[in-house]
Amino acid sequence: MILMKKHIVLVERRIINKEEIAHSDKLFSVFETFTEWVKKGKSRPSVELGKKLSITTDQFNLIVDHLIMHDQQDRDILIKLAYRLLLLYNINSWSVDKGFWNRDNKQLLQLVIPNVIMPKLGRRSKQEDEEEQSKPFKRLKNKHSAIESNINELEHRGLDRCSDHGLRSYTRYIGLEVCAYNLKKIGRRILEQERESLKIQSSQNRQAA
Image 1 (tube, helix red, strand yellow):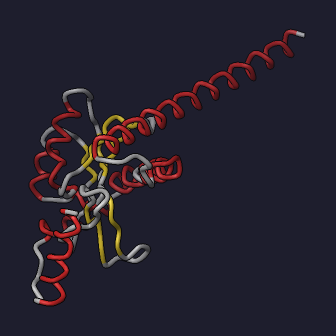
Image 2 (image 1 turned 180 degrees about the vertical axis):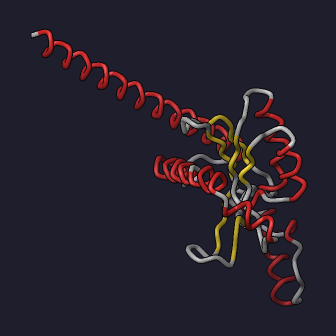
């Protein structure tokens, strides 16, 4: 009832009084109040409601970090994310989306990471264009497509829609999905190694015979 009354007030302010509602005052779901307006004005879909999730994978396509974002943009979390990961891993190269681009972010990361692949959001200078057209940049950037497939796999495995209720349950749901994803990747690799071992053993047995 409280949320319904709040929504009635918002509708009256927006439609009748023609007010421009501040984003922080907007209500996108009376069922899951933590829901955010993820994006608008883009094709397929033109509007997307939900919760932004940051996923970081390593060279083996295992998820080494995930972060549920609360009213944050990609560029806002990058430095804290880098600090958290650099305490655990020796990172030689790091590729991110354009949404993470910020001049300060890039300069700070370049102090500690040899290869920072961060395409510029917006118009590029001649120097920036030459950098992004270079072979090393393109080679490392092409590896980023694997990250997109990882995210798609998470969505197809159940992460596109949370069936639990409440932010706490949603957070738990994300963690379990990430664990399941990693276990599947590890299990798949173990099966591949076992098949390779059986092939080698079979080949050796034929040669011995």
